[in-house]
Each structure stands twice: as C-alpha cells, then as structure tokens.
Image 1 (cartoon, rainbow, N blue to C red):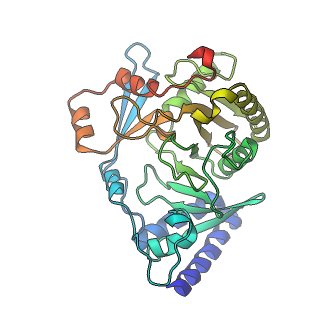
Image 2: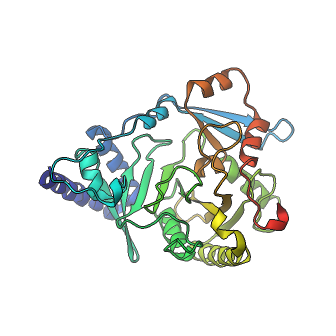
Amino acid sequence: MHTNYEHTWDKLNSRLREIEISGGGLDAALSELEAHQKESGFIKIGLDAVERHNFKHPEYPSRFFRIQYNPERALRFNGSGISTPPPGTEIRNEGCFLCRDNIRWQQQGTEMGYEIHMGETSYYAWMNPFPLSPTHVVIATTEHTSQEWPVCEKGKLEVSVLLNDLVELAERMPGYIGFYNGVNAGASIPGHLHFQFFKRPEDEPEFPLERAARQQFESGEKGKFLKNYPLDVAVWTGKPKAVLKQASQWISGWAAKNKSRIHDLTANFIVSRNTPGDDISLFFVPRDRSKTHGDGMSGLIGGLEVLGELVFSSNEDKALLDAGKIDYFSLEKTLASVRTPFFLEEA
C-alpha cells in the first residue's frame, strides 16, 4: 500500500500543481482535490441537506445571526478511518490525524493532500470529510508543530509568522474564509498546527461578523474595535502587508499587557478576501480557555461560530429550530457567554 500511495500522491500533486501554476490558482487546484476526494470516497457527506436560517434583530434588521443546520455533520462523531495500523506500520506522534504518515494507513489510502509552500514553511492541504461549506480544506504544517497559540510560552511560533501564513493563504484564495482556532477555541487538534478554509456559500456570502465590520466602517466609525457584536473583536482591513504589520504589532503589545493571565487565554483569527486585488480583513478574537461552549449550545464555539454562523446537527437542535425557540437574542446570548475582554478592566 505504501508504494501505491506514494505513486498516487506524486501523480496527483503534479497534476494539481500544473493546474495552479497554469493560471487556475490555488482555488482551482483545491477544487480539483475536492473532486478527487469525493470520487475516492474520503469525503463522507455532501451539502445538499444543509439549511441556513437567518435571524434578524427586530429593530435593526441589518444585524443578524445564522444557524447552519447540517444533519449529516453529526456523522463525524463516528470518526473516519481505522485506529489500528497494519502490522509493521509505525504510529507517529500518538496517531495524530494531521500527520501524513498516519493518514496513509488511517484512511487506507483514500485520503490525499496537496503540498503548499509558503516562505520557509510547507503545508499539506487536506479536505474535510465532513464539510461545513464548499471546498472545506484543512491546511496543516507538514511537520508536527503545536497548535498552541504563539503568545504563550508553550507556543513555538511568533504571532507574526502565524499571521503571515494565514494572510498569504487568504491572498492566494480569494472568495474563501480562513481561520485559526487556538487550543480550546473551537474544534482543533492541539498537537498539530493547522488552519481551516472554505468557500463562501453562494446564497449567503456575507457572514454576520463581516457585515457588522462593514457597516461600522461605512458609517465612518473610527478604530479597530468592533461595536454592536457580542464578542470582543479587533479588525484590520487594508493591503496585506499593512494589515500584517499593524495586527502583529498590536497583538504583541496586547499580549504583553495581559502577561498575568496569558496562559488562561487563547484566540480565534479569521481572515478573508473577496476577490483578487481586494483588501484583506483580519479579525482577532481573544478567548478564555475555560469557555469552550456557548450557553444553550452543545457544540464548540470556533471560527465559524465567531463569524456568526452557529452549527446545529442533532435532532434536538432541529426540534429547537422547528419549535421557534431560536431567535436573534438567543444566539446573541450564546456568543456573549464566551466573550473575553481584551483587558481585565473591561471585564
């Protein structure tokens, strides 16, 4: 199996790289990878059953939150692949699900990735078998590097390095939303650094967080801190290099001012670019490690939820929707329950 896997990998990567460099870009390469992974059977579900429900503020209807009801997403709790390797196969890094040497045997050769190079770091793009949106991809370092967020002493990356790769990916993937979930800030694999990206839904391209930021900017409101949102959010919008410099400097200074509690904190970073040549938007949301779940919600609060789209997948979730128990204010309360102030005096 090892030889066949490597042969298939090399052949696929050569084809994907040709697609990328011939003008299609990274988006076209990932779309082709997605098609390959559907055909191989690795991607377990489609998106046909997904329902999106918007809940508007009764007095300010431009403000809204969204529910994604994705019943097939619940299948992820059954896992994917095998947990015991074939005889003679070595388990790496305690069976980490993002290490290529493990993926080869765990998915019995069905899961293939695409190698992406950015500066001094290389990544593998892996398709999510239980997607939340079209072309849902996990972009993980080729090396087994901690997901611990970098302002902590346990983290092994400078915040500028982490943000540089996230921003560069957004530049190469216009029309996608990307995010980094720090440890205990959403679904994550703590031992292996990775980002998640997916295409915007065609029928619902703007997320609540993005709209709140856009409307604040269009109103002439100054400053990086977002108002009229249940979480503390800092946002930078502009040319990629300027955004990267401003955000890295500010977050480093913020971390220094929060040194006494920094080990209790984690974060979500979200980045987006609508079309080639557009400005980049980078969102920073501090999180308390102990607040992993929102009130009234069984799932974790991660990057998608921070964007204002909460995922429901269970029959119990569906019953709440059908009974009219969900509205703008209940979703606002759920997000507000994990709010973490930037500074202690704001608590």
